[in-house]
Length: 90
Image (cartoon, rainbow, N blue to C red; front, side, top):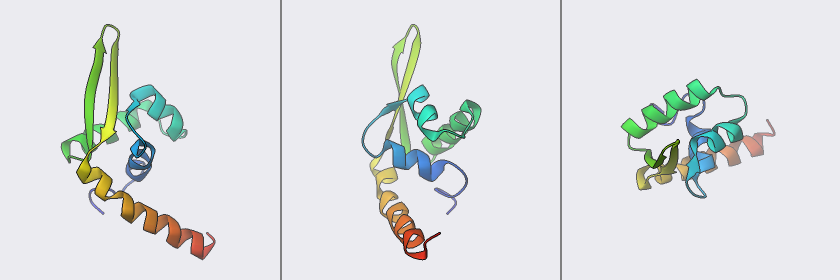
């Protein structure tokens, strides 16, 4: 839970499962999270080896994030959690 617990980490992994996303695109998809919060979570997740940050261009700077194999291994846990909540009709 230390790695994927907390607000937004699971959602970030879920949104990255289909491929890399630019920072602003990811922040938009998360909806209620501020860009500062998304940035903080992504930095934590990069340090933990869950996501990879890639600078696409330097002028203007554009950054994309993708899920690592380690991060992808957490998706089955998130899917099980989603299925569990669906069964509970929460």
